[in-house]
Image 1: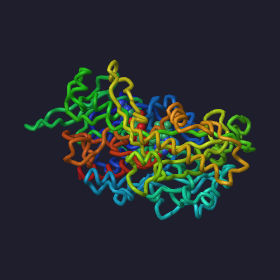
Image 2: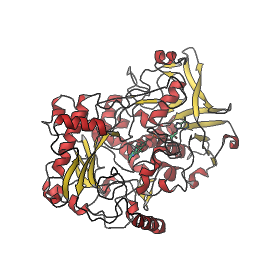
Image 3: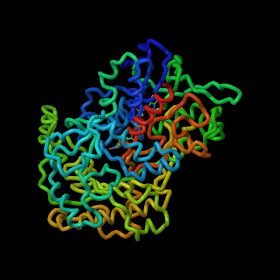
Image 4: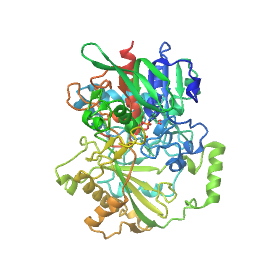
Length: 552
Ligand SMILES: Cc1cc2nc3c(=O)[nH]c(=O)nc-3n(C[C@H](O)[C@H](O)[C@H](O)COP(=O)(O)OP(=O)(O)OC[C@H]3O[C@@H](n4cnc5c(N)ncnc54)[C@H](O)[C@@H]3O)c2cc1C
């Protein structure tokens, strides 16, 4: 059942309590509730997204940021979490990304080969909204057709599609055609894949916590309820803290988990809840007056996000559906409401291009290369059509590009004046010199992209940064215009069982504790070379099996 208030709860004791009904939490709750003898409670700080138009219409994703469905930092309260308001890019990264996880955790279960079945278990590949013939636009052999979350190719043509498709022929070295960016080697230019089905956003809420699942008698979803802390008791002579009870905001009611607490509050709130519960760097916590329960200095560290910058162009476009034409926009919405087709079924773009930095680039000459291996891109390019909502206001054309393999790391820490309020996020952008040099290269590669002959009559001029800017100017431009892709992960990272760093073991149980597992984007030891929802879903599917096996 879905409950709006704690007073509706009929019990205070459950087998598993999942904190956070977001991308990962919804998956774990669904999968555990497949075992009818388990009683599962999900506690979600935010409201439902049901019937919220902005959470359904793909083109409206930008409307959701900084609303009640967003914490105004990198994660969102509301069932489905970030998957209910993200940009719907469906990208898995490279096989190297996962093999690196397996290597550093010394656990083959995290390799590409072993995680692929979980990736497919999550995915329900679906026809595009316009039902066009998709042969040659993706590789069916690497997709799941019977999973939970819908994915699809673009469902409405954009005016620049035919031009973009000529780029691989004209720039085959840097931007060859890529049949499928989710086959483990995302290098080249290919069709965009999105978490969309039937012209509508597919989220972990719509896929894993829809009515047919929340009607299970053993699955309870409590909305509008924020967890402040979790409590432990010390068990046995070893004094291992065993976590089993949960303290909520604004009520004295304590909830208990008989088997496990599963922390899925996302990469910002998971470390916050841990630190408020005394799990973190003992000295830092003591300074805030929080008694240490478990000394794990890696909590909140290793925050990894990907910076994005937009290069703007003025273009020759007679695309009628401009950002400002309200009559056509109303028609587009009416069409979407009528049969889920038309221009609003698409998110940011119809294509993505991925590339590695040239080996003679200044970035690689530093001797630093954060990429996980040779199948891994450093940069991602998203060519915006003149109608894209992703364009900064006033720009008629341009490219957003992302450094998908950042070397910089930031952190999440408690706000000393209000530890239970918003935590402090230090993105750490450009603390590693590699990153800014790689972004400068990204601008140059964008310029190369638009030098392909096909753009001759389309591009009028580069408007920002100025076309003749020096490298120093470009660095300034990047520093001044960079924003976050909101892909922050890694703040409760997994590491090998015997490692002297990290927060969870490869089975995602918190090191040195009992009864507490973390399942969300915080456990990624390294960010993947892509957007982060696909790996979070895969982690959650894998974790669900780990938990089921542990409690067979
Ligand atoms: C604006 C935006 C755009 C993005 N675009 C893309 C994209 O296009 N493609 C892509 O792959 N990835 C994208 N991402 C990233 C991706 O969505 C996230 O990495 C992923 O969804 C994180 O999943 P999670 O389970 O770790 O956390 P979340 O999905 O954030 O889930 C955490 C949940 O816990 C709840 N919660 C937090 N604290 C508490 C508490 N104290 N008590 C109770 N509940 C709590 C939250 O409300 C939330 O529902 C985007 C992210 C954002 C924010």
